[in-house]
Amino acid sequence: MKSILLVDDEADSASALQKTLARFGYHVDVAHTTEAALHMVEKTPFDLVLLDLNIRSERSEHPDVAHGTGLVRQLRASRFGPPIVTFTSLDTALYETASLDAGADDFILKTTEIPRLLSRLNMHIRRYERDLGKKPTTGKRIGFGRFTLDRDELLLSIDDTAVTLSPREARIIQVMAANSARIVSVKELLDHAWGQDLTRSPSALEGVIKRLRSKLQKHGIVTFIENVKGRGFRLALPN
Image (tube, rainbow, N blue to C red; front, side, top):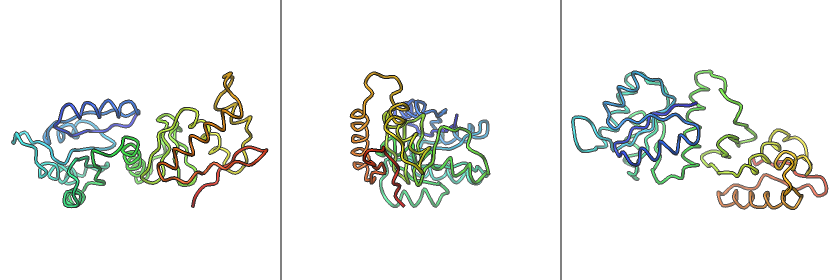
């Protein structure tokens, strides 16, 4: 289980985000001040730090951007290696530049949808693991083309975009991704996605694929599932 340190002095929003990330398989500890965050980093290894840029210090009752960028600088000065992502409602280029200049790896607005936030966090953790030469710790993620399918979190990611899938949509993509070089028959897809469910039928499969294509289009993703008449379906991945 990946661990995240969430640094946010707004208790309610921090608790809500902590619960959301926990549902997607993360262990999340929360620090409400810059000093508490530094103390926790010394005691506990984390895979990523997600911090509100406008954070409070124990020396001040009022949150301040300087505390957030200062915390980033302190972490980097202490040779803290994992990704640091600022997560803020301060939507200006000035704050983004200040955050990145301080040593943060990314700047994400609090208005960002959860699937996209998860995609960005996963991307940074995977990149850090690759830099360390670590092998993937779980087989739950499947890569095909520019896409990554997370079977447990039911997320399909490409670049900075993440799409939440239904369990059947995820199973259909999974079996096709495992057989990307060939046409997958309707029967094989039904066996994998429906099993012995009495609702299984070719028309049910076509309905799920139609809804999946529509969902992808809404996220600006060109459909990659191609219908081969009379034979089944195959992947037609974008470059």
